[in-house]
Length: 167
Image 1 (cartoon, rainbow, N blue to C red):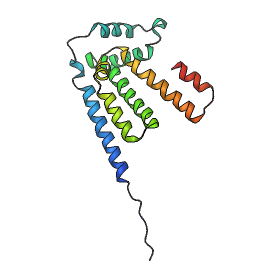
Image 2: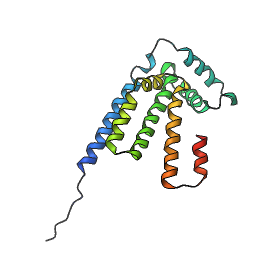
Image 3: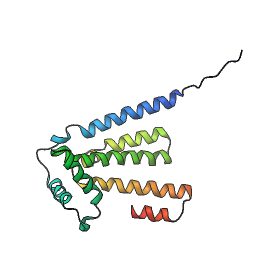
Image 4: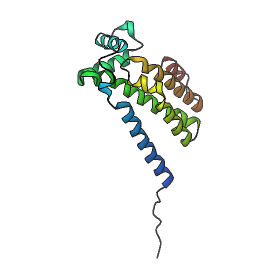
């Protein structure tokens, strides 16, 4: 009689993924909680962003990706949530990129801990809930560092340096 060995589940990796999913759920709730009633009305920067997203041109090319996303969001969802949702999404995406960067530079536990500290920082919560393009000042440096590190690590072609520079 031959014994068959079943594939064992690695409990450490299961615990790690369950922890990551639960913590991301808590962070998402923190970012999305009362988003429509964050403040009464809109701040001056949010009002300027709403006006700019209605008429996107070449004079505002730096903020164009955010403004396009905000325009689509405002057409789908009315009110404060539609204005502020792009900031939340870009903030969460920035946290994900930060985790990937830290994961490549350190071990998984430090990456999770540093990402949670990054996500829970007062300024990150503030810019990720504010309905203006300020949140992109967090996204672009992390994206450039992640691309540049991967270009260096994997010894990629020269055009990847150009892409990192364009980002």
